Length: 218
Picture 1: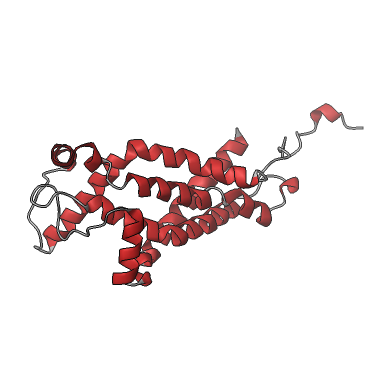
Picture 2 (picture 1 turned 120 degrees about the vertical axis):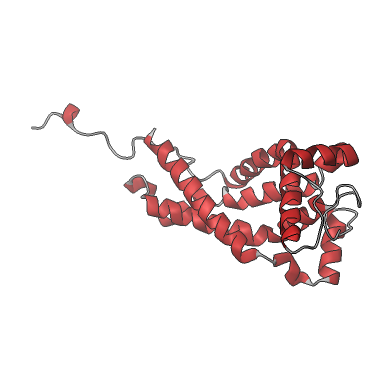
């Protein structure tokens, strides 16, 4: 009779009874962290948006150079607009990160659980990638309108000082949604969805597949 001590350890070694079953709490946790991180990352997002807009308009000869580089953009925005300027669009950024990760991270385990019976062992990498891709696609499609509003609000600057190109003037998040839908149509809120979805699918699939794979190996 073979010595039991020589047998390999069962796979998986241990699976929590709550694996992928946190429900609404799990979705809330997935949203809270990224949303709060916006307080610190939003100024850099504002700079990125304005630098990208300036670069695009300069290529078309539709604007003059206002910012020399990213650091100059940050300091000039602070000088002309203060804290409100470098935190432009903070409210919608928090909504965007919270809602996007609500789906992007929150859906991953439920989708993976539907695809794979964890009692049979750890899911293969292709299933992790597929689950990540599905959750990333849902997040991008649902949250694209928030992305549009966020970008336009962050681009708003002081005309003649820190404003680049045409300025969409909105009094706030709700006003932005209302104005865009009435003046440009609801379709505008999903402009750029294709590339946004491809980016989200790729990033989410690789990110969550690698993370969960390494976590299971640890």
